[in-house]
Image 1 (cartoon, rainbow, N blue to C red):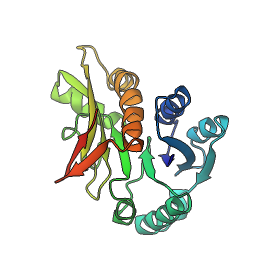
Image 2: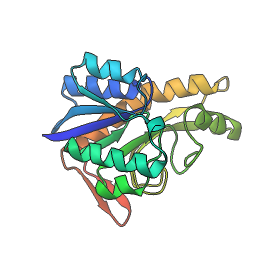
Image 3: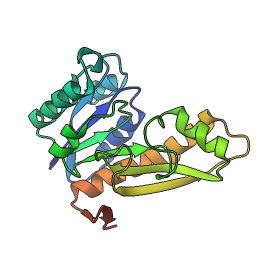
Amino acid sequence: MKNIIVLVSGGGTNLQALIDSERSGMIKGGHITCVISSREDAYALERAKAAGIKTRVLARKEYADIAEYSAAMRDALIEENADLVVYAGFMTILDEQVCRAFPYRMMNVHPALIPSFCGKGFYGLHVHEAALAKGVKVSGATVHFVTEECDGGPIILQGTVAVENDDTPETLQRRIMENVEWKILPKAVSLFCEDRITVKDGRAFVDL
């Protein structure tokens, strides 16, 4: 069984999707062993505790800069014997120290169809505001490996939803979470734990 460490910063809805998927048996070959938060007040910690999962807080504000914080996170992940690190609403961009320590062993879910509406500054509602401003007719979410380039790692899975004429950033965000993020993130985690993802020449090949 692979050790899955989940990184969080907020409410933890994607974490809950992972917990529920593990309980239902959808995630095969892996087990969530620890949840690490960048904020001590993140509700995601309560979700983890309710599920009996170990929690740790590595508060970003307690570190002088991102390099110091990234080094501390890398060390914490090594301490937890992480086989897979999952960003689930984790709002801090870690530097290369972490992804170099866990190459193609870190994944993130992004609320858009990469390479659209991604990279620095595209997070939370900002993503959906940009998509609506552009007038896209479909949007969705992407699970990708975390690399040194923000949102630039190999794409593992994507899913789409239709954009409605009366959508607001909030309604679009909710539809994407419920219909895409909460489904493809657990699926990608299970695929990794079952050794069904191969990376070659910067592309992820999935054995579905």
